[in-house]
Length: 120
Image 1: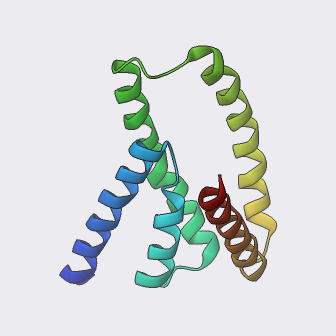
Image 2: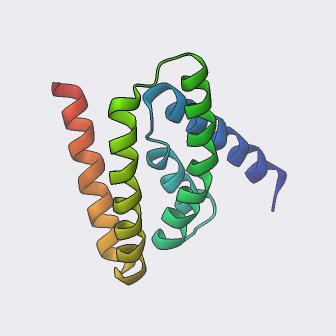
Image 3: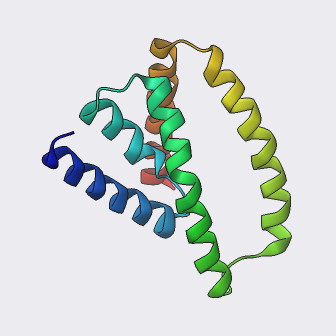
């Protein structure tokens, strides 16, 4: 891999980590387009790679939030249970959905999230 691509990936990682730590998630919206654009990964590989990248980022952000006492266990624990179940369902669906449909679903979700952020 070219040095330019490695530097770009590191910068993408920094932006992803920032989004995750600052916004409480959202790293996938940075990682997936970068992996598909920079490395020409197909959508499934990009999404699966993003999941693997975001896991340690989320753990680190969670530890910092726990240390800073910004984590509400009464909300966090039930949500973690839901995320666990949803993660399994999402990963299983990712295996069977085709790339074209995945791009459309991802685009619609990102568009709706963007509109929601602008309005609310």
